[in-house]
Amino acid sequence: MKEFAPQHMRLGILTAALQELTPREVRDPDPDRAIEDWLEFAKELGADEIQLSAALHPDESDIPAEAMLDPVANTLDLRQPFDAARAKRVQAAIKSSGVEIADIGYFDNMLHHDAAIREKKRDFMLRVFDAAQTLGVRAVCGFVGKNPRHTIQENLADFEDSFVPLLKEAKARGLEYRVEQCPMPGWTLDDSFYNNIGYTPGTWIALHRICDKHGVGDQFRIHYDPSHAILMGQDTRSIFQYLKDEGYAFLIAGFHVKGQVIDAKGVSAWGYGGQTVERGDYVDSKPSENPADQANAWKKQLSLCEHELPGTAKHDPLAYLQNRTVDWLDHQLAARELLELDIPSTALIVEHEYPAARIQDKALLKPILQGSLAFTRAIDEAAAAMYALHTEVLAAQDIPVQGRGRQAYRS
Image (cartoon, rainbow, N blue to C red; front, side, top):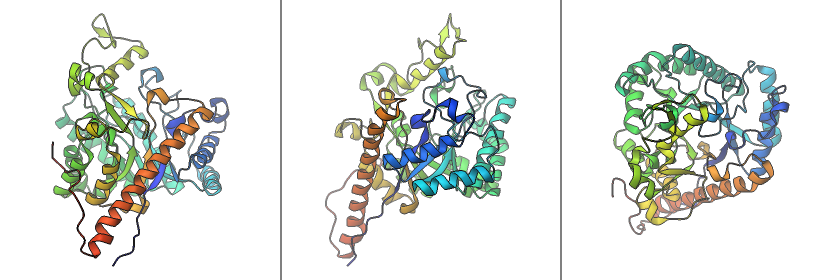
């Protein structure tokens, strides 16, 4: 006999959910106030952890805010070095709130084709690494990116030349770098849909082999986001099964909890490559110089889907079976059944990018985020209960589990 002892993941939230929780006129002269305020807000929301958002300050960014699809927050302000005094202040806020920092997220194109811009992003990433080390945070989450002037195959060589040295810097600081797999279709005004080469398991494995060759395989991990799998017609269970079949079940080390709701009408119009003509990012057949127009490049994604804040979309079993929205319960079951995770230390980071609910008002946004986090926690608790019951309690007494459940590779 075995006792019923379910193991739960840790619940977190990305601080970009509310970019200006601390007004800019307060946080610019006192940058660590933004972190303190977010730790207290996360406590109010019922979170165990935050993913601390870092980004180039709006005065330093090479991309105008008007050209971006999703909110970017520099909750961690690194215009000045994050030294021991700043770390002591933040650690005091962590202790006071009881909310921890799961990792630091800096999401940018680290293989930018412009050498000067790439170096600027690299320098900022090193500052993020230093801040993570100073805070005692064990991971940084971000993109690989892509040089749009090269093929994906050529980008593998670019990764080896340019990104592997970054991973060596991470190794020197005792950090993991966790790659989120968004293909970032709106990063360019051309028709390329895949502008982050770390977008799918096939490339994760290819990139990890390069890392292994240079002794930084342990630094390269994946921060899996099921919304991007849905965007590319994939499902979580099959992805996890593929990684296990190939011997790479260890690659996934964390999760973004964000869904994608596919619009069948949009797929009928444009397919899974999205809108490629008449988007509004060109004027007189030339790229527009207006950043707001350039944001229309994201119609490669928006024409066929919309981000889901977990819990805000209708329960739709047919959509689950068609891989047109995330089957959250099976997502959590598959993670336990197929991946190599230390469940109690694995973070589920809710990422809020549902456009209709992207409210920059704390009072209005708070109950929305509370509901989403409560939904996410309940789903993980249900999955934990099922997994413990199936694989431990029933198995110990030789009692068969009923039914088949969702199966990988089945359509």
